[in-house]
Length: 400
Image (cartoon, rainbow, N blue to C red; front, side, top):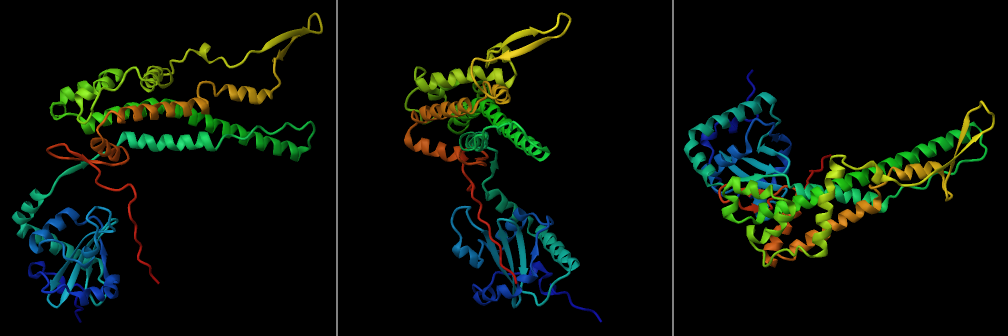
């Protein structure tokens, strides 16, 4: 006995057609056969399938298109309903996957799905020229990682750590303790030392990254607002990016659209930022003069109790402080929380200074790109735009 495939009504895509009505009944029953869906495992290119359906059936006609927002902020990006005789088949592109949902009476096996997908892809060739025309009509944008936004997120994390989560003071050393007390003290002190290490790491990372963050802002301004004659010539554009940072900043009004005046080199925010940039190599390349990192002074008295005995080195400080804490705090020299937070503030003041020199309409565009983790650039005219929201909507259909 030969069992008919659950997908038999859908295996000849050449016979598919546009529904004569919105198929509201089919949509109302959609939940009943949603369990027979197939989630794309990479066998089908969503782009190729969309162009195929667009070429054959026009604009997406699925019911979810009626509630779709005009932007990309949608759970369902596109949805087609195609008629197969007295049945329909849904093609739905969610944000997390492409699904094919036939109006089937039973589950299909993996082999049956493979047969349907194979039949569908073979039919692509039949309408290849129409698919090509649709493909040519699409705008091509290239997504890229926004270095400025990425660094903003990292530095905000470190800023929160340094500002809101300072390490607790070291545990007091007990004058006397049993074995359990000694173990408890050791555990507490190890935790204190670990927290101090995390704070130092956050401070050092912040002080290294803050200048890079500031420079990434300048380069993003040139990328988004650079005049066409500069952007069109790769060598000229790269030469602009290689200029000393102060020259790059002072030339923004010449090289970019939207600036109504030159950035004031005499402004305090400019001078502080330039000082920060000049000092960055010391941290980034370890070019710090160790003598510049002195953090305390110790006096030694040398006491010899026997003529031929060892000399005792007695350390003396002119203030009262836990020696362990004194030395641990010393390792934060030049990378303290206060210094790191000051660097972040310096870059923020500089960014505000530059933005204040840009016309409001252009400034709004730039700020939108600044906040986008993954903006895009349109092929051809190199226009930059925000294509996707940082907050991606999610949807999970509840099951039993």
